[in-house]
Length: 63
Image 1 (cartoon, rainbow, N blue to C red):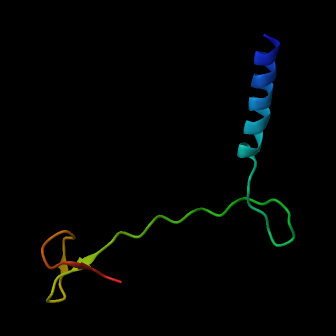
Image 2: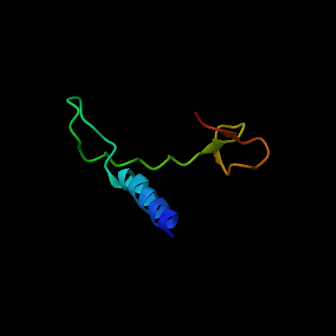
């Protein structure tokens, strides 16, 4: 029983830093992390240069 309580205590202490903000500014002070941008959708063009649905034959992703 004692080892179970000890194991739970260690597990709860190891999970605590996951809630802390990992972002720091240049001076080393904690700050709010910037929002992550959503990935831009992939667009494709066909051989003639017109927009086409990706996955169709001849369509290539734009760079």
